Structure formats: structure tokens, C-alpha cells
Length: 363
Image (cartoon, rainbow, N blue to C red; front, side, top):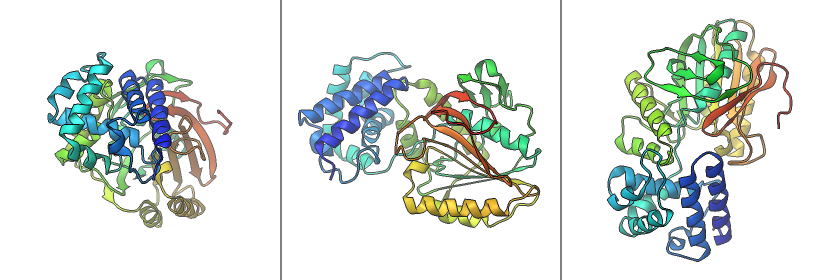
């Protein structure tokens, strides 16, 4: 069972992270919650019996999302009135009073929300992943891509090639008439925009996939968007609408078994791309080992006719959940050289692009 000290530390650390990621509202809300826990206030009873690791289980984010779900569902109108609209500032004291009243009135709903693992699908991560996909396309000579994603949630990063990207001075890429525009601050050289991109196949897996056709599932996704970041919400909504229109779905399954089965299928004259973003840290150690084994086997079997790529946007190895700025790493077989292409944030932008050179320590 988590100690009160561990819970307080988890809330304070997440509060600092939210401030760094441009959400003063979330930073204030979680710092206030930490103070309430420190005083053994009313929310202590709600969280005191938490059995797992509050950091690994993302308890602070679950708590904030539970409140946001009440706002978005219309079941807590007084709390909704206190929440930020279009990113405007709010009175922290007013928000907290309304939050406590909403928790008391809707406690079963809050407890139910807290009991389920977080489900996020940051479309902004596609801005960083785009550079990796373009690099793969260039080095694979324009071979059609066979895309395999794990930890895919609702699959909102599956149609990355159908999004429009506006990357500041680096330029634009993607269809100009796309209903989804990903804007990202970009530093470093331009990625290989001239690469020929062809997607022949898309498949994705998650242990608890989000069905974009399910209203409650969509509510859960939206609840995890921070309330003072309306641009993120608009991007999410646009991506959900596109995925629904395209009919894309994520398979339910255990990641290692799914990867092993999929990578046994050799794809001639295609480049197979296994990719994931901010998912690796949540896989059990045994799952990671089995995925690496499947990746190694696929790499050994790869050749110029059937290349294989492993693309991942994840925190540096060994840092644990939320530890360290995510790195975009690419290993492309048959040569099997691993490179760090970029650094980004957990939500994607801003992106610091290094290019396709030899791997170096960018920490």
C-alpha cells in the first residue's frame, strides 16, 4: 500500500512536470491536492488505500482526469463553471472548493474512474515520429511500409501520413486538405521531406484498446487532456473523427505475443516498421524481454528486400515513468545500427531534430 508520503511526493512531482509542460492549471490543482493530502484532508480517504506505486500507476493524472471527466460529462456543473475555458486563468481556491463538492456528490463515479488505468493518445507525438518515418522511407528506398504499433490506445497515431504538419521554419508536410493539423516547434535540420512515403498495411495492438466509436471511451480520452490546453483537445477531437471515418481499429492483445506473431511474417519488398510512443515504460519486464527477442530475430532475418525498422519515442532507458526527456530512436536492419534521431516531450512538441547521423549522447 502506498504511504501518504509517497502519494504527496507523486502529486508534487507531477505538479512540477505539468508546469514545465505549459499547464499552470494542472500544476496548481495537483499542488493543492498534495497540500490537502499533507493535512490529511478530505481527499486522503479517497486515495489512502492505494495498493500500487502511485507514480507507476499515474495516480495524480487519474485524479485530475476523474475531475475533468465530471466537467466534460456535464455531471458537475459548478465544477465546470470554475474550470478554465479556452485556456483562461481560473481562481485556484474556487476550483478546489468546487472539486471537493463534486467529489462528495459523485464519489462512486470518481472511484470508478480512478480504478482504471490511464488511457492517453497524444496526437502531437506524431510530429516527432514523422521524422523517423521519413528517415525510414528514405533509407528503405521508398519501399511500402508495413506499420505495426504497440501500446496504441485508440490508434490515433496510426494515420500519421494523413495528417498535415506545420513545423515552423522546418516547413510543412502532408496533405494540405487534411482535417488534422499538427503544429510543432521544430529545431535542427529539416527531416527528409522528399522521401517517398507509401503505407501498404497498418495494424496496432493494446492490452486495453480504446474504441473510438464508444462515447464513454472517447470521454476518457478527452478527460486526460489538460483543461487549460484547448489546442490539444481540438487536435484529439479531429484525430478521433478521422480515425472513425477511416474505420481504423486497435486489436486487443498482449504486446509481446502480438509482436512475436506479426514479426514471424516476412514481408517481401516492404519495410516492416514496429513503433511505439511513451508505452515501453508501462510494459512488464518479461514483456520487454520477449519483445526484444522478437525484434532481434526479425533483425537477423531482414535483408535489403525485406528491411525491418524499430522506431520508438520513449524516455531514456532506466529512468522509469516520467523520467527524462523522450528520445526518438531508430534501429534499421539489415545493418542494425541504432541512432537517436531527436528529442521531444511526452506530448510531442517541441521537437529537437538531430538528423540521421551516427548515434551520440544527447543527454
